[in-house]
Length: 222
Image 1 (cartoon, rainbow, N blue to C red):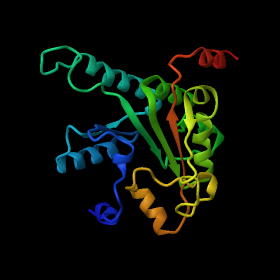
Image 2: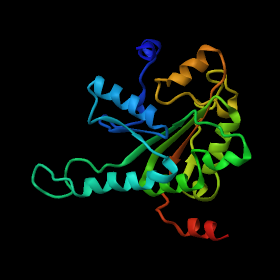
Image 3: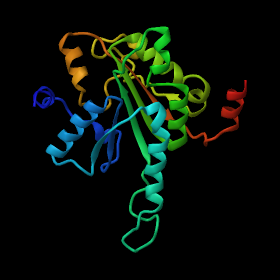
Image 4: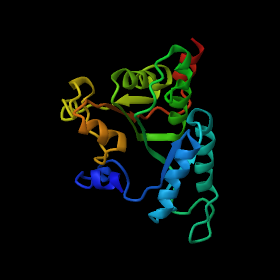
């Protein structure tokens, strides 16, 4: 399709960040869009590796991740052992890309990245887990980033910025000039780049603080 043609010259760099074998789950709040995406998965023979779910991440993510991790505990391995099915169903990488900015104050609660979402990611991610954020609207990127540098975000996540990463990329200013670590752009990303407009990105790594932490509890009680 058009998207595949537009991205065929980009280099897939996911192996630099992710294990060689991964399951991918896309969350989409609009049921029609998630069903369209799921139909494309089946059309391309990717069922079992990639799936899309229509849901509200801020309402359903904890439940979905609980079911996912619990399935590893009950998986039967080749030797018949429970919980030894060859996978620990670990949450390794989360990308939140080009969400609706919801600029109106009355719509703030509709934003994808909320303190509750950050807490949920901290709960299910182990040390080294990655959260990648990007938007073509600087204020939207900063609104997402803000949640990862305060409260539970400050306790459990560290912003990643090597000297080679923090430079002007895709027209973005140095402060948010991280290159896309996945290499393959989204459809929105392709559209923005074709218009020579900037894209703002940042990336956070789950640190070694165990969940829940006393610091996290203290921050919530202040």
